[in-house]
Length: 121
Figure 1 (cartoon, one colour):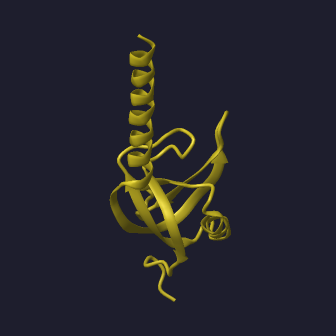
Figure 2: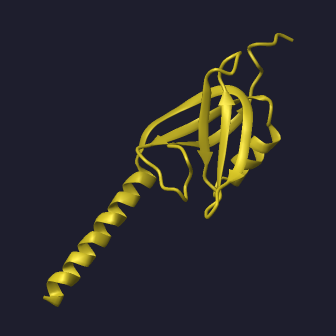
Figure 3: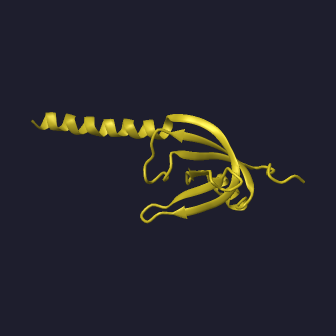
């Protein structure tokens, strides 16, 4: 009986580890989005995550929300520096997420400052 119980517990832990590895390492899509960076914040009650938003339209009607992993400190620093400016974001979309990774399925991997197409200089 103990052997069966032990095998069951090891099997459940194995399935949970496989699910976590799938969610963390397998991406659904990759891409880029551009817009005005309107928000970057470090929020959460138990676990704090980096969350942000860009406006992709003139009226701000189309908002793209995203998360940034804590290990991507260079991306976080650039997002804080470019607050309120037009940026291009490279992202990966995951199938799902965990509360300690972020609120969204979109995770930013690179950020670059761009010229706004709305203003001609």
